[in-house]
Amino acid sequence: MFDITLIAMGKLKEKFYISATEEYAKRLGAYCRFRLIELPEQRLPESPSPAQIAAGLEKEAELIESKLPKGTWLCVFTPEGKLLSSEDFAEKIREVKLSGKSSACFLIGSSFGISPRIKAQADFRLSMGKMTFPHHLARVMVLEQLYRAEAIQAGSKYHK
Image (cartoon, rainbow, N blue to C red; front, side, top):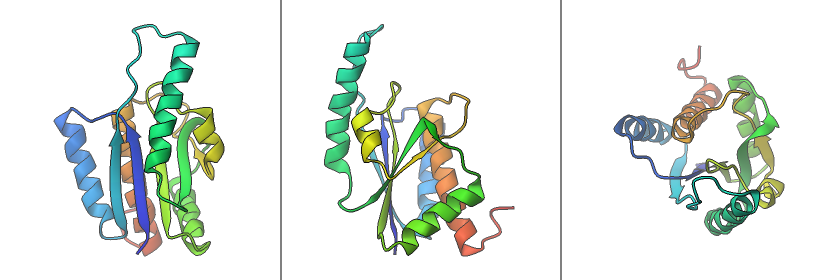
């Protein structure tokens, strides 16, 4: 069975986001071994300087690197990434599986983004669109799209 890991910076607090996350994680379990890793965001001043942001992202990068599964295919969600339809996203995951990889890891960065060092390590950069979303909502959206991608690959009627 294929392994999917979602690394997300920040901890969910709102019950409705937690419930939605749990629901999609449960649904994904029918298609893959799913694991969610929540990592703490670096605390920065109210109005951080570019240098403080860069230093915070580098500390987060060290933590992220320590949690990346060995030999995994890494996809980061970033505004400059590629835009894909749900069908194209399902096809991308299918290609990863066919390439011989046994796992994929998806990364949602902190409110200040993702370290350029981590982006450089990524096998794929994916955008969720030009709109800005709260990171907690983005987590639910990513989980729904992962579930949808697996359902598409399985020929389920979930995706219409």
